[in-house]
Length: 121
Image (cartoon, rainbow, N blue to C red; front, side, top):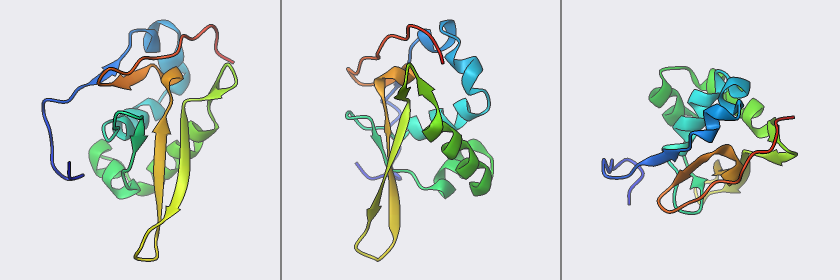
């Protein structure tokens, strides 16, 4: 499916544990950015948005998105990341970010599951 094509029949699963565990409170403002990244998620949890796309989707600036992403990449639950990033070099000579939303984030898509949270660090 093209990245710019919208499929209104696809839903993210935001598990209640995102809130009952206190994770949403810990994430604060960065939760909106995490949800925007998740809106590009495929079955494996990989996401391919640009910072400009994320800024447009959240009504913020690319600079603010960049700051939020740095915080999300550093955030850990039980020592595990909720988001990781891999930098890939494309055929046009630019670097692109490929994000992965991990099951401990309490966000999934399709038949994906989440990992239980025992406590927050």
